[in-house]
Length: 254
Image 1 (cartoon, rainbow, N blue to C red):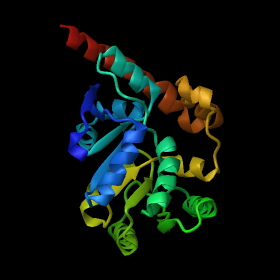
Image 2: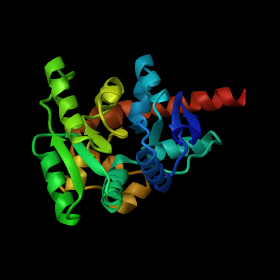
Image 3: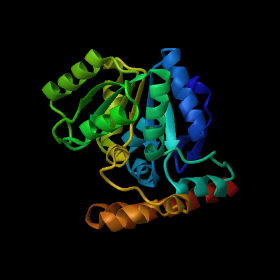
């Protein structure tokens, strides 16, 4: 199932050409068929970072699904004449699949985010969907890399819960490295990093209006609300995506 999804090369990163609806369907199939997949959500910055790190590029290019998170990535795919079907962001996928998991009686585990965020998200899920299977939550202490003891604690908690899907909110690419390293050790079918989607889905942080999302301006909304934290990401690193696409386009036309 997972190997049937074609991929599109965007600046050296293989992005899965799959829609949001198809992603939900594929998740369902993986759980029912008891497959195990590693899923990455890749905005523009992740693609830029992958061009500076072979290790990160390899991480994305060996993932089972690499989802397109960003309107500029869609624009680039069209410019390269290999159009992607659409955005599949963690912010969209998490709330939609929470509802889907409730309907299908699939179980979930929320790992990461700041203290109290996963608990707030779980509480909201239980209020909206009584009986939903949230098998576990855990917010590990902040660290660039977990100690062996802490990492084993995380693995043990997940394995005791045996969820169908593990949602990981440790920021990218830290969350993606953690999943890659530990996927074989955890008892689940789907492991996916979704960055700040916990806070927004829980209602702790407000999301950009729909019109800004569709126009590719969601980054601006987030920057206005968190300028200090996001200045480097959006105003220094993200513009580096443009020359990468121009270079790829030039090579393609030669």
